[in-house]
Image (cartoon, rainbow, N blue to C red; front, side):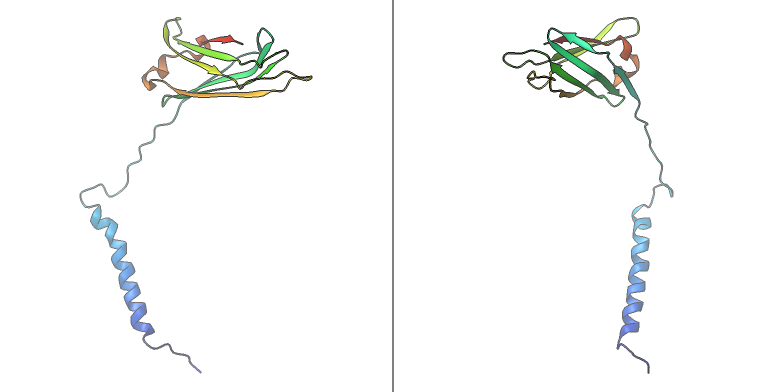
Amino acid sequence: MKFKIPRLKPVLVMAAVGIASLAGVPAAQAAGQPSSPVAHINALRVKTATWPELHVGDCQQNGGTLTLNSDGTASFRATTLTYHTHFGDVWHSTFRFRTSSGFNLFSRGAFDSPRMDDGDPPPHYLMFASFGFDPAAFDVIDIFQTLQHSEC
């Protein structure tokens, strides 16, 4: 026994014609353009520097890492803590960017840690800052000449 759906064949033909028509739409819209896409890839270049453990007064910074991207974006991440405070300490960092010959290019900051309390052991606080700079300066910045000025 065969089962037939009335008017199914005309519907399938119309669907096939519609798909074929739609398949040609991008080609019609792309008239006058190259037949194959051209890729424009600019690889993001990165410079990273990490400071050793730093101490200012009763405060400490661990793993302070500065990352510069060739698109002009940058970030700084560190862990901070304090061994003694009465009202809560805050770690402040300012960065001075220089060339390999020591020429000062620009500064960024001050960036602040969260307010820190002491304890036994002292709690650790994530410090994070993001900022921008002129991407044209990326190639002349010597990240290992960058100075971090810190206060707490």
